[in-house]
Length: 225
Picture 1 (tube, one colour):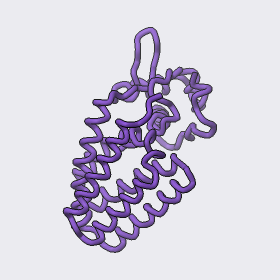
Picture 2: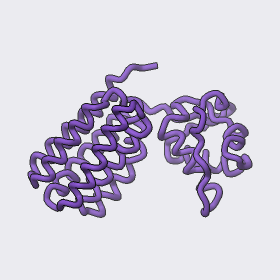
Picture 3: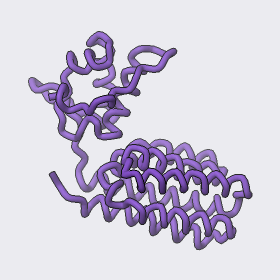
Picture 4: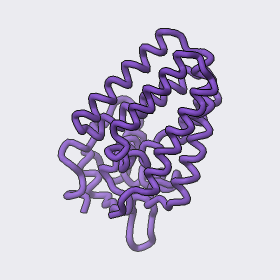
C-alpha cells in the first residue's frame, strides 16, 4: 500500500505558483523518478491526495498525464500502477543516452574554459562526498547535475533539448544501481574532466561512451527483487 511504501520525508512539498494539476504531476513524477514509488506499486488516488494535501481531481489528472507519458499504467478495474520498464525499454533509452552524451563530451572538450572545469570539479567533489556518506539520493542528484553541466558546456541547444527528454528516465534507471556504481562512477567522471581540460575531444568522447556503457551494463546485471 502507498501508506507504507513512501519513506518518511519523501513526499515533496508542492511549489507555488502554477496550476495545481501541474504541481501534483511534478511531485508524483519526482516520487517515481527517485523510486520512492517503486515500479509496479499500486497508486491509490485517495492516499496520494492525502499525502500531497490536495483533492483527488488533480491527482487523477496527473495520473492520466503520467500514463500518456509512459510512467504509469492504468489497468481497467484495477487502477493505476507505476510502470515496470522492460529490459528492452531500458536498453534502448540508455543506448540513446550514450550517443547524446558522447557527443556532448566531445563538444565540451572543444569549448570549455577554466570556469567550466572548476564547476565540474566542484560537482565531482560533491558526488564523491555523497558516495563516501552512502547518501544514494544525493549521489543520484549530483550525478544528474554533473551530466547536465557537461551538456551545458557543450553549447549545443538542440543536443541539450534532446538530452533533457531522456534525463528523467536516466535518473530512474540509475537510482537502483547508484550504490553499485559508487566510487567507480566518480573515478570515471574525474577521467572525463581531465580529458575536457586537456581539450582532447577524442579522449573525452571515448571516456564518456565507456562511462555510460558501464552504467547500462550494470543496470542489466543488477540484482532483481
